[in-house]
Length: 203
Image (cartoon, rainbow, N blue to C red):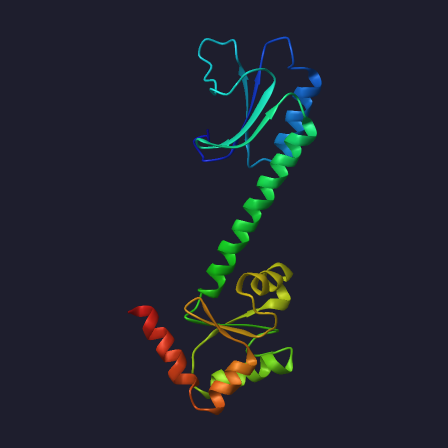
């Protein structure tokens, strides 16, 4: 189960004097250092107050759980398999964390332009053009310099399936890049389109 702070729990079930060797203890000590986000627990299966899973048939057994959800069940002492399990969960958590951060960023202003540079110092022709179009239309917008953070730059491309910059978002939804902005501007639809998106989100 997860502990009070909601962390994933790595639990080693053992019989005293049988498998809890110095190597085992040292491995867990190192794992705690490398994976501080996990809670580690030793459970003596012979203890009267031990809470044991129904599936437990032998020791040592290592379970990796989140709440009542068993993510990994490893029978026998297999350090490499344990490490792989922890690394898999750790990477998955990082990906979820990045997705949350990207969605927070694109929603940080009602209209957000992700560009190379910023309003006062655009660092490519297309970013400069996007700023000029939005300012000419009298649209208030925030910017984010994707050159300042490679993780965000690569992450937005993957998350929103748009390969180039700049990228314009309205209320967290992708509108498109420079070509779309330019086409909307040239047909005098830009201000109406952004206004429509803003109003639709509020309804």
